[in-house]
Image 1: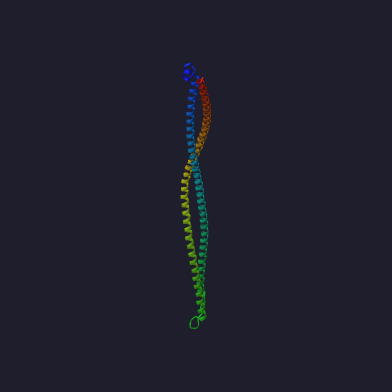
Image 2: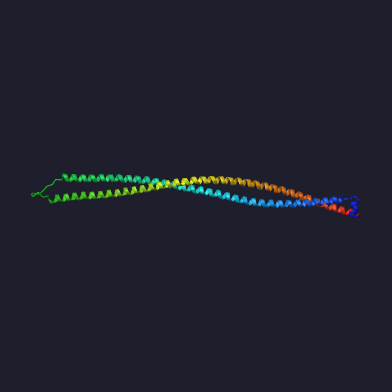
Length: 267
C-alpha cells in the first residue's frame, strides 16, 4: 500500500503527526536560534557594561585619590604658613626687646656723657690756679690742666662713639623690625588669599563630592543592572536548555513517527 492509498483509506494520522512534529521541530529550532542571538546580544551588553563599570570605578578612585592628595597638600601649606607666622612673631618680639635694651643703653650712655661733661666743667671751674711772681702758671699746673682736658676730651669722644654705635644698632633693629612687620603683613595677606582660594577649593571639593556621590549611585545602579542581566541570562539559559530538551524529544518523536509512517506505507 502506497502513501496515497493510505490517505484514500483515511489512514492519514501518522502523516499528520509527523508533519506536526516537523513543524514543532522547525519552530523550536527557530526559537532556539532567537534565544542564542538574544544570549549573544546580552553577553555583548554585559561585556560593555562591565567595561564601563570598570572605567567608572577607576575614574571614581582617581578622583577620590586626587581629592585626598589635594587636601593633604593644602593642609601642609597651611601648617607651613602657620609655622612661619609663629617664627616671625617670635623674631619680632626678640628684636623689639633687643631694640628696647639698646635704646636703654643709649640713654644711659648719654646720661653718663652728660655727667662727664658736667664733672669736667665743675673741675675746671673749681681748679685753683697759682702763678709765679710774674702771674704765669707753673709748668706742673699747666701740665695737669692739659692732662685733665685731654682725658675729658677722650672720654667725650669715646662716649660719642658709643652713642653713635648704639644709635646705629637701634636704627638697624628698627629696620629689621620694619622688615619683619612687612613680612608678617605679607604672610597675613598671603594667608587671606590662600583662605580665599581654599574656600573656592572647598566649593570645588563639594561639587566633586556631589559628583562622586552621583558616580557611586551610577555604580550601584550599574551593578544592579548587571546582576539583573546576569539573572536574566541565567533564566534564558534555563529556558534554552528546556527548549533544547523539548527539541530533542520532538526530534525523537518525529523520527518515531516517520518510522511508523514508513512501516504503514510498507504494509
